[in-house]
Image (cartoon, rainbow, N blue to C red; front, top):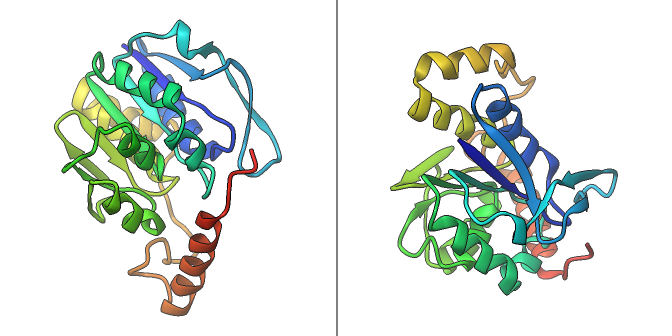
Length: 218
């Protein structure tokens, strides 16, 4: 099975690397990092790079497509880039699963793939996701048909484990989870807006809204 993980400048590393580590642990899965132009890809942290093995022109099909997210406003570049959107549409025609992590779902929406579709994203992007025609849900992993979307950043690991379970069975997925020792025990229970203190949620919401108004730097 072939997995194509789309990269672009300004991407959040864990959005791509989380699913990669899960898929790479299963025999028979071939994972490739693909970008509009192959080579080094700048991260949104501006502190490192990922590497795209292949360009869009070299990949015309995939069994699984993963579109990772990024910090706002970096998704705008892809939402307005017809080469990127056309490539996503092309690959979507061939996939068994088309997926996103975090606000990568905004890019899927811009490609016209989430009209009327139940989908999730980072909680700070629900309003924008809705405005693009999707039906936002607070689920950590949301599925409608062959489209599977994951919530913010770390949930890409959960999504990939769920896909492994659907394709290869729960035992294989549990084995991967154990191999990665993915057993989250965070020091604080504030990982969703429902659990975090209200002042903190509002503070971050305002910050994200201000960032979304800016133009991408990368």
